[in-house]
Amino acid sequence: MNTDLHDQCVLITGASGGIGLATAALLAEQGARLVLHYHTQPERVQRLQQRLETQSIAVQADLRDEQHVEHLFVEALAAFGRIDVVVVNAGIWNKHYHPLHEMTLEQWHETLTTDLTSAFLTCRAFLRHLAQIPRAAAAIILVGSTAALFGEAGHADYSAAKAGMTYGLTLTLKNEIVRLAPRGRVNCICPGWTRTPMASEELANPEAVTQAQATMPLRKIAEPEDVAAAVVFLASDRLAGHVSGAILPLAGGMEGRLLHPETR
Ligand SMILES: NC(=O)c1ccc[n+]([C@@H]2O[C@H](COP(=O)([O-])OP(=O)(O)OC[C@H]3O[C@@H](n4cnc5c(N)ncnc54)[C@H](OP(=O)(O)O)[C@@H]3O)[C@@H](O)[C@H]2O)c1
Image 1 (cartoon, rainbow, N blue to C red):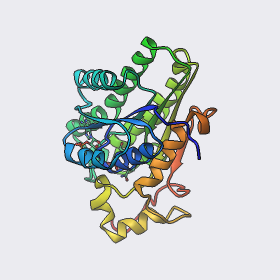
Image 2 (spheres, protein in one colour; image 1 turned 90 degrees about the vertical axis):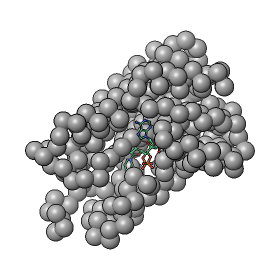
Image 3 (cartoon, helix red, strand yellow; image 1 turned 60 degrees about the horizontal axis):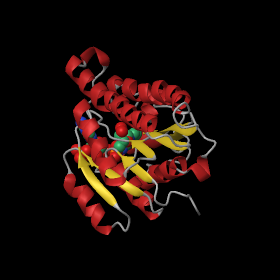
Image 4 (spheres, rainbow, N blue to C red; image 1 turned 135 degrees about the vertical axis):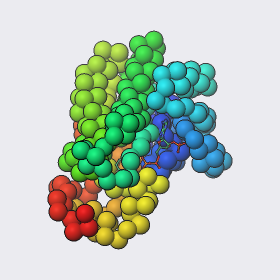
């Protein structure tokens, strides 16, 4: 299928993570030129680059830091001259179950800064770039979570950050981007449990997997490639050119959470 992503420049934050690597590989198959962002794990991105046939650069940045985000975009533009699509994917999830009355302010700040403020800084840098180099089409794809849709007991920090991305940023920026690029689109994918390093410990527990699958008709833990396919669709102006402001649950039809799992 022709996605028309050939030679488009796509910047992926968190390209060193499970979803980021799969997304980069699939975008490369479409011929996209890639800016592969990583934070602490360059080797993962470098291994991927060795087998990519498309042009790519790897750039380090701590996306909590305004200057780092600016540097990421400076490097990307020095290499490719323009960026057409940004995948806002980097993030953390504190694996410990901390109900709000036990959550520290430090944890709250850490998650909100890493997940939501980094998304703000990344989107802002891209929109500033669009303001400088006018064009018709552009796309932002945010990676939210089912935690934004259903909440997640023990993880209010993550749920609040992802809800900010999913509802606050997606639904606002879809209206702002068209003032800079008339066919600009902003969409959000909300994966449920996905087999990546972030979720590996939880998914090693068969009871946790049973619980996660219990509200899903498809009874499946997503593979990173499932998310990557949705990113490619939303990145493609040819396939998704009339899709903006969509919040796409990617969780096998999940209806909610088990409220009284026996293990808690
Ligand atoms: N896996 C799931 O079950 C699941 C479900 C729903 C949503 N999601 C979302 O999907 C996205 C990707 O997660 P994943 O599962 O692929 O997790 P992952 O494998 O742990 O990858 C996380 C990525 O975020 C980067 N990162 C972390 N802190 C950063 C910081 N301060 N500055 C810049 N980058 C930072 C990491 O960089 P380094 O590795 O280089 O340090 C890594 O590339 C996240 O937003 C996550 O919330 C995941």
